[in-house]
Image 1: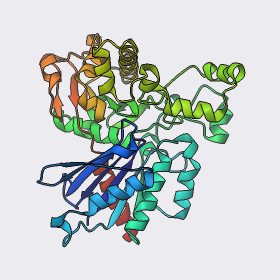
Image 2 (image 1 turned 30 degrees about the vertical axis):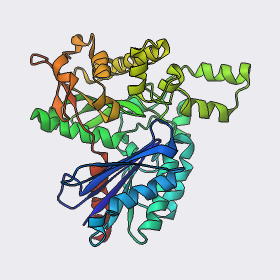
Image 3 (image 1 turned 30 degrees about the horizontal axis):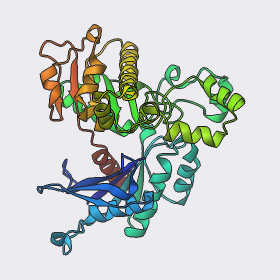
Image 4 (image 1 turned 90 degrees about the vertical axis):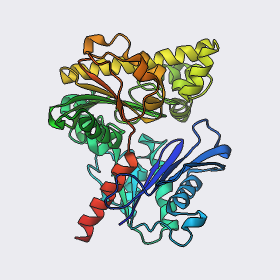
Length: 403
């Protein structure tokens, strides 16, 4: 039973088709417009056992991007016209499930409506996911679809880590709490870290850093999330590509009162014009910021330094929550791809037992350990496998339904 996994993000759509027993997909890939140019998005398609193919295409909206991803996933090449990848279930990564969804569910009209009601809490993610659901309904009529929620990994956060220091009634009556995000990625990395280290997951204290367009760090003890940087929405926590991360809420009140910014203007700025892009004025893409900084761009250098410092602070705070650290994980595009960021984030962290090996850090092939041989805590670079996790979960939920 082949499962198609779709991961619709703010600036990409990732996909993979997995059969029942495979760890590696039959075909995988992504459509990416991280530089903001939807007219010149990249499609990278990787059939199993064959070289990846890279091509340009235009994806003016999220629906078109998802439709192109589905076409690339189920088979559109000459060798696949007679034997396309037959899909029996489609799994979707859904960023925000709110208080309503604590586990994966089959998608129906009510589930779609509930996801839509959470659009304002995850405006860069839930709307694209709904467009991907619609595209799959059109392309694969009658095929069951499953929603797999990032927030589910954090459903059992301890109250001291999920209740905000606000009137308790807001939590009790309105559900204002820390939800946490990137849970699918953090869950995979926790399990993979235990495999790499040859350790019992129940005995491991991990800080996992998912660093891409969106960024979060999570403290994981015994395979269970106990604290995380993202909160009620994906805006809180670390500085990100276009999102601000945590800021003094008094700034927002001041901007409304003194400068007349509307809620809509604030919403757009905090989500689309802040973070690395807002500070650097160059790009939300860290690779381009690093290049500009190397050429003497002071704002780019400032953006890089701010980004690294916030990651360092989060690692230290989460390690304190854990009472120590056995391993630090870097994953996703920036976490896997930037030696400079990893070096900056680990600099001065010897007090946590983190000693980076500069040579190993320069050209690691995930999944690997880049800590120095004598480092008390290990430093891992892991290629996150959200699509694999989504496919497995979709198949599990469908199996329960059919049983």
